[in-house]
Image (cartoon, rainbow, N blue to C red; front, top):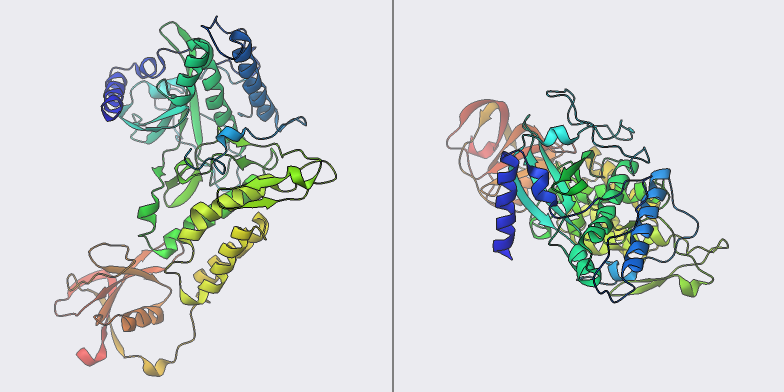
Length: 494
C-alpha cells in the first residue's frame, strides 16, 4: 500500500512539473454533470447484482438532485433517514456554489492580484476565484491522504502560496466498490464526482471562519474524459490527537472553542441545521491554530422524520438518546445533538479539562458533563465556552493570592537569560519552560510553584488570547542585552 501511494505521489509531482497535473489526477474517469445539466444514462454496465444500469442511474440521479437542492438554498421536504452505513456514530471504525450552474473554470489572468480571498468573519465573500489557469505551473506536489471518495494533494502555486487539491480517488473505496458492483467506470466516476461537487457547494454555502475556504475549481478534459473536476481549497494541517494532548491547555481550549462556534453555525446555517454524519478528527484540519471542517460530502441538512419519539433514537457506540418527535413530524434537534455528542466524545472530553487553570475546572467540567448527557444544546454550550474565554482573557480566573507569601523579584528591563533553562509541562518549547501568563503577578506565582525557578524572562510575544509568553529559568548567572525582553530575578540573589 505504501509503495502504491508513493508511486502515485511521485507520478503526480512529475505531472505537475510538466504542466499536465489534471490528466494524471483524473485518468481514467468520466464526466461529472454539473448542476442544471442532466446526468443522462450511464454506459452499459457489466453484470451487476442490484439492477445494473437502472440502479446506478437511480443513485446518480439521487446525488444529482441532492446537489441541486443545496445549490438552490435548502433541503426538500421529502428527506428520508440518514444513510446508516456511513454514520460515524454507528460505525466508529468504519458540495453549492451561489450559482446553481457552475460554468467551466474561468482562468484568472496571469499575475492577477488579490489571491487568495480571505473574507473576514461573517463576510459573504465573492465566491471562488481560482480556475484552471492557476494550476498550470504549480510545484512541490505532495500526496496528503485519501478517504472513501477523494484524494487530497498539497501543491504550491507560482506565487508561493500552498493550497490543497481534491479529486476523486480512483483507487478509493467508493469508486472501486461501484465498479465491482456495476462494471461501469464512467458511471461510477460520475456517481463519486457528485460527492465532490456536493462538498464544493457546501463549502461555499456554509462560509464561516471554521469552515475550510473554497478558493476555486477546475473542469478539465483528460484524455477521452470531458470535464473531470478538481477543487482548490485552503490548506490545513491534520488533527493529531496525541500531539494535541501534549500542547498547552490554551491551544487545546482554542480548538474546542472553534468547534463550538462551528457547531453553532451549522445549527443555524442558511441551509438549515446541518449534521456531520462522518464526524471524526480526520474530517477537520488546523489552520493557524483554528479548527476547520474540511470534509462535507457526508453532511446532511434534512432532519429525521418521525411519527413518535420511538423514531427519534440517537445511537452511539456507548449509549443511546431518545429525542422528542415534534408536532410537525420531525425529531427535535437530531442534527444538532448528533454533532454535539460527537464533539464531546472526540474532542471535549480529551482536550477541555486537563491541565486547565484550577479555578476554571468546575465550569469546564460542567461543559463536558452537559454535552456528554446532551442536557445543553449548541447555543448554551457556545455561551459557556465564550464565558470561559472571557474569564481567561480578562484575568478574572486568577484566584486571589496573598502577597505576603511571595518572594520579591527585581525587574531588569532590556535583558534576557540565554541559557539556564529547565523543562516543564505543558511548554510552548520542548527544550525549556515557556508558558503564557496574564501579567507579571501570575508569572511570579508560576515561578514560585516551580522548585527550580529562580528567574523569568518576559518576552514581547503573545498568544492568540493576548497573553504574554514567559521563559522560566533556574538562575541568572549569564545575562545579555535584549531590548525586546524584561528579566525578573529573585531579590535574594542580587
